[in-house]
Length: 326
Image (cartoon, rainbow, N blue to C red; front, side):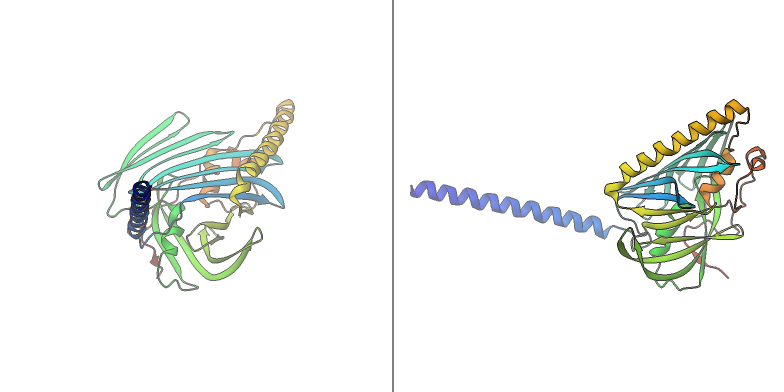
């Protein structure tokens, strides 16, 4: 019996020792991974759901997923939005998939934007100091190479870099040249920091940073939490996105999509019977998604006009670092 007791004690001691070693290594690995996080780029792993509203009505949703890798990040942004074109609903279906390094600099991305007017695709990959771009719109396909003086970030990650900045000053404007995934080109991003304030979103309180993005003659408001995760953001056409709890996201977004697709199908059937079917140009959808579309209402002219010219590149350097405007 004493021998069995001794063996039992030894087994328990070994088990405790191995368990302690496992926990220690796991904590050490976690601490090591945490210490490797960038000091110039803030991001939290997980998923975010935002519901789009316009004039008190559901207008779509945004779903973002962020996966932390050993050497960077994998990001996915899916947006479904419906706009009215002379009273007829038109949908915009867009996705952006991105690979970033640990500091949030671009490695590669793919973009798809689909409307009743067509499909736009873009891919980009950083190879050394060169960004290789390919775009497809209808039957037109282009490729180009852009020499990079410095690494670049995507425009949709501008706030992740800004929130990591020490000493944000209310009233100051920050700007840089970023890669816009919807235009597939380097574009200027200008953000004005408003304040840090308490904000209630879906019955939950957050300490939020408030920014305003310049979009043509207008400014669009963005509210983010301490890790640059969106709480509220504005789109053109008086559309606002607000975060909802992740547990509700999948069900709520599926319900919204069903309702809007049914509405779109019914309207398309009526328009087809009347011979007045309208289409929404992909160029207009890309402007809306990128935040460069500043008109109050879409019109038939918007649908049939030639594609808008892409915004000119910024005059400043191609760095992803925000600079205080002169």
